[in-house]
Length: 602
Image 1 (cartoon, one colour):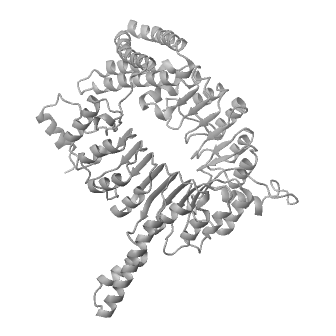
Image 2 (tube, rainbow, N blue to C red; image 1 turned 90 degrees about the vertical axis):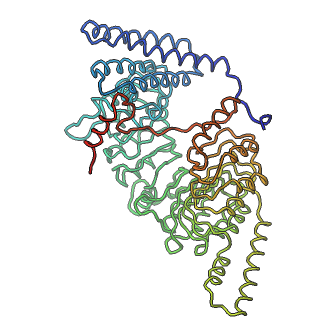
Image 3 (cartoon, one colour; image 1 turned 180 degrees about the vertical axis):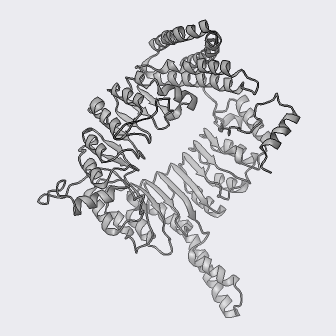
């Protein structure tokens, strides 16, 4: 098997240099801590006057020797090095630690993150920065004047995080000051604290450059924000869900942005369209054709979820370029599912709800299947192999397919009813003979379905997050020869024998990513089989949650991968141990018992 394994390639000179740089910076953080962490007055003065000068000189030296094309990689190396030093320092804390000195030492290490506080940066992702460093960077945002992409979704708040004015909530003063200096912003993601004032600052600063703005769940925004939003005329993407902006103001916003193409989280879209048609007398001049939007996404309302046929026809008429639809379905009494066929550009569908035995879903997919490239089915009842075969025939262009919380049945609905009737007992001989014939017909139908099944030749990503029997798993995977990503949920009945059958018929030679969530039947034999068969596999996740694989076996497998330089990522993020006695080794057993008694609720 070792001859067919993909080995990790030798590291390039650039990669080796980055590793060495990260190692150097990690050790330099400790050196800075030792030099500048004194608590005497002269040492405090030295820290306040000299440390920041040292950081400025080091920052200038680093970025003056870094090509622009690897600037983001270097920034990530700096973040990892500083965070590693900070985390190790935090682990040194015990109940006997000198707290003033400890806090000063930790401050010196964390301050080294100021190395990335420069106008040279073009991209800053706060969610990807560890929390202890985010909090420090919050007060340095005004230094990032060259940013083009800024994500503040998980912003760390400083002492000036919020001020309250006499009329309205004002965004953090340091955030507004920072935005006023960012004249090159093209994509901005603001967290839940965005306000009217901050939007006004954006208009004054980056009106011409801003293309994408995501400001979901900002409860302090109201109708006054719409006055400023419409001035951002170059916006192509807007995400505006969960705010207190009213329907009228939302309508004036989306219809007032001529270049808007993407309306993410636009659950209010139907309400806006109905307001324009039935109440407005400005946006739609009744003597002119109905105004249209160029947005490509439609999401169901997050208030009432289910839309009527009339509402969907209105969306079709006023938003003809919609490609992505998230639709909640609760039977034909609410909405005719066939209305989705009137969207000429539909390619991505997320369908929530429906029953294949009750609702006209089968003819629906026969009608629109050829359009679809991505299909996500949630809470669909009575999914059988006949439906899967129908999807393979009707949706030849599928690239992504997901079944989430769907109910699968092994045979057709009629076959299941016949089995239940037979098991109920009390049948005479003639009835049993007739029932046997019907069952035989159903089994023949099942065989015909398998013969009619067409491979999903274009399918690259498959996710099964539903209760799914072995026969259905085998049936689906045998006809998915070109998968590159596969996700199997905890409720899929997968075992070593099933995996052998699947890979014997379909070796999944193009599979690169495999995530098998918690499983109680897969063993190390499956690991060896996957390595021997799936020759393109590069990422394998979920192994720690295979309960049939012992921790010692997993450790041995990971060691074997390392020793043989196998190009396979099995890394898992370990849960942080927040237990009372974690890393508190100076406590003896008597002290631990006293703490247990003290904190006990008994």
